[in-house]
Each structure stands twice: as C-alpha cells, then as structure tokens.
Image (cartoon, rainbow, N blue to C red):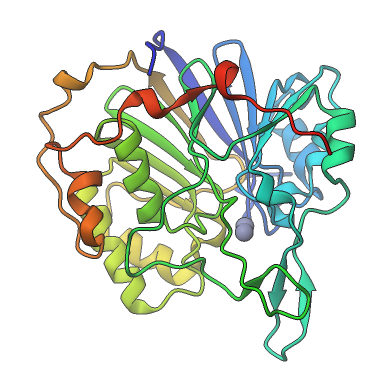
Amino acid sequence: MKTQMSRTIRVTILVENTAGGRDLLGEHGLSFWIEAGPKRVLLDTGQGNVLLGNARKLGVGLELVDVIVLSHGHYDHTGGLRDALRAERRTKVYAHPAAFRPKYARNMNGTARDIGMPFLDETKIRERADELIWTNRPTEIWDGLFVTGEIPRVTDFEDTGGAFFLDEQCQEPDPLIDDQAMFFEATGGTVVLLGCAHAGVINTLAYVRQLTNNRPIHAVMGGMHLVNASPERISRTIEALQCLNIVHLIPAHCTGAAAVTKLQKAFPRQCRSGTVGTTMEFEGHNWIPPEETTSLAPCRLAGLGDHSELTLSRSRRAVTTASIASSDARRTRQSS
Ligand SMILES: [Zn+2]
Ligand SMILES: [Zn+2]
C-alpha cells in the first residue's frame, strides 16, 4: 500500500433509518458522504427518497461527487444512484458485478419481493457514469481510500442475515458475494465503513485486518446486519469486537435495535448509533511500514476456525499490502 499524505477525512451519514436533526429525513437505507482532500466519494445512495434533500440540508454538494461506491446491490443502497449520477461532473462507479444480479427476499407467507437495484441497470450506468469499475478484489479508489472487494467468509457464526435469493421462486440462495466495505488509514488505526455487512461484520473486519497487515481498527461505522441475528450470534459478535479493541463503534441501518442496545451495553464509551447527520472526522494517516505494526497483541478470535491466526495474529502476514490492487492497474472494463 502506498503512502497516504496526512489530511482530514470527513464522513457524514446522508441516508439512514433515523434522522438526527431538524428537516432531515430518514428511510430504510444507507449512504455515506466522504470528503478526502479534494475527492468527494459517495458510499451507497439509500433508496432514493431522501438523498437529495438530506444532502441539501447538510450542506453537502452532491453534484461534486467524483466516485460512487456500491456496497452491494440491494435497493436500499442503490436506489438513489439515478439521482446521484445526475451530477454535473462525470463520476466513476465502483461495484462488484454480482450487485447487478436479480435479488429477492422471501416474505413470511412464502411469496418473494424484489429487493434488487431499481431504476438503473449496467447499461444505463455505463451511459451515465464516466466509468463502471468492477471490484471483485481489494481496490484503491483514491489515494488511501480502499474498497475490500469480495470478503472471505471464515467465521462459523455469521451468515448473510436473511432469506435472500437470486430467483423469484426462492430456490437459489443469494450468497451476496457483492457485499463489500470501504476502509482507510487514520491516526489510531483503520476506519471501516460498512454497507450492510452481509458477509458478516467480523468476517469484514478480519479481512480488513488481513489486508492492512493487522493494523488496529480505530472506527467502524455502518450496517452490521444483526437485525435478524440470534442472541448467540450477537454475543459472539460482541466477543469478537471486544478482542478487536475498537475505539469508535457507530452501528447504523440494519444493525437492529436489539443488537444496538447490546453493543451500547458492552461498549458504553465507544458505541453510539449513527443517524442521518452523524459526522466523524479522522486524521488521514501515513501508512506505517509492516515492521512497525507489530506492537499489536495477538488476537485470536473464537469461531474463525483455521483462519484465526492468519487474519488476526501479528505473527502471520500471508497477505501483504501488495495484494491490494491500485485502481489504475486493476480496473477492468467489461462490455454490457
Ligand atoms: Zn442488503
Ligand atoms: Zn441495507
């Protein structure tokens, strides 16, 4: 990973289930606005009902967006893309190709509902965007801002968090391989921004640790998709988070009220829930060479199976920073 110049990186929640201030509106969905030096990045777009209004109220110049990252293909993260791509400047869009697959959720009565990307398909996005870049692998979207790409599933207590399918008959389960998170380095450690964490929040954090040579995780913001989780999954998630020693824990969106309550009880000083209008500022940090990152105590997580040492112990660095592709080297255009 190349060196990142020191600078302030500001993250604002534009769309979330709860509105945190006057004239702001909530909807089931999520969107982050990230200001990093001269770059303006939108991670997800909500459903599209409140994105533009909230941006206006929060003084966010959505028309200046340089890059849009889609965490996965569900409607509550991609519905605002049509509005966001009406920006005055040409915008690059980063997504995993599986985000464009049909997506359904099974209702309690056995019927299915469409929860895939509304309004736009791959062709229309290619028409409106400067470029559509696939993120199957870890990818640097801008100096020091990364997207994970596909996240390995290594824990034995996490799943996608719902009855998700690729077909309307609900025969073929959707593994949500498109699910990805963003991360960057800040003073104190890595900051991770989650969409829905359908890959599992601990799988996601373990993978980010692996990709950053076990840098400590400083902050985690976003959807942890524990809304349907069993009490056992929630308590094992909390156990793993305790092991990771995170300074700021900002659960939002699909984390679910029961899980948020438990997280706040387990992390009274670190945890506060994110709403529309929540803003966090981080000092972007120069990358510390791997040999200087060994002060971390080895952290072995129960439930990671054979991967526990690989991903969370300081002694193993099987995956090096070289495995993170730069956006220039790795982008692939695929015809529609
Ligand atoms: Zn989702
Ligand atoms: Zn969601």
